[in-house]
Amino acid sequence: MCKEEFKERSVSFRAFGTLPIYPAADSTLSFATMRVPASVAAGLVLLSGCAVAGLSAAIHWTSFAPIGYYVALLCGFHVGEFLWSWRFEGKGLTFDAFLLNQNWPEYQLAIVAALVEYAIEAAFFPSLKSLNPLSACGLALCLVGLAIRAAGMWTAGSNFAHRIAEQRRPDHMLVRHGIYSVFRHPSYVGWTYWSLGTQLLLCNPVCLVIYAFAAIRFFRDRIDYEEQKLLSFFGEQYLHYVQQTYLGIPLLGRNIGALKFVPAASPSTRLRRSSAQEEVAAKRQ
Image 1 (tube, rainbow, N blue to C red):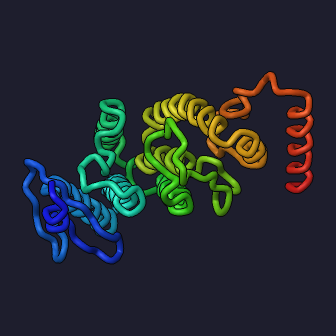
Image 2: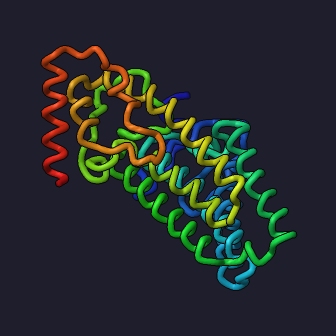
């Protein structure tokens, strides 16, 4: 593609900069001043419409409040992930940015299982599926989780990616301010709280246990691998950072991640680690 053709296939949008639209078999739809692939436009319209419909149902029909809020939160989450990828990662407009096809088919089956459990239990115990203190706590936990994840993604900016970096980029830096001064993986913490909150919201006891088990298993393996990479990128700087922050995910324990990969540290390293831990403990007291 020549330079002139590339310019013609790009649009300017002040909030997000220049958005390249690459030639593809997919047709395009025009929204105001920008052109996007039809699949992306359809995804935005469908997810946004479902989110509004779910929120409307939750507000106007109390008997449908939990499932309405669930649909709104689920669709809103995926729209938010797409907008973040668009803004910070600099990706082209592709349907994959919605993360609807992530971890196929486990993630999709988890959503289906939640809906099936809710429907079955609602048929036999309808009073348990109305808005109650437990579901209200679940709704609050969802909002807290989304806020933590959004704060982490926004603070990290271009340093955040949905895929673990295999090699350090020249501009890759260790983010330690904001919410990263408390949680070293705020996006994982937020997703875990949001995920478990959805099942509290629906009052799904079976899926709550399954979701908790799946989240712990998934993040244990992912954090082990990711922190091994980050330790190779940033060395002692990352190890010191790990000692001053929390994982924030219940039941994961402390002996995972970067510390797990340095059991045979030198005496001087162990001494610095012990001193840092004592210093952090003194500050928190």
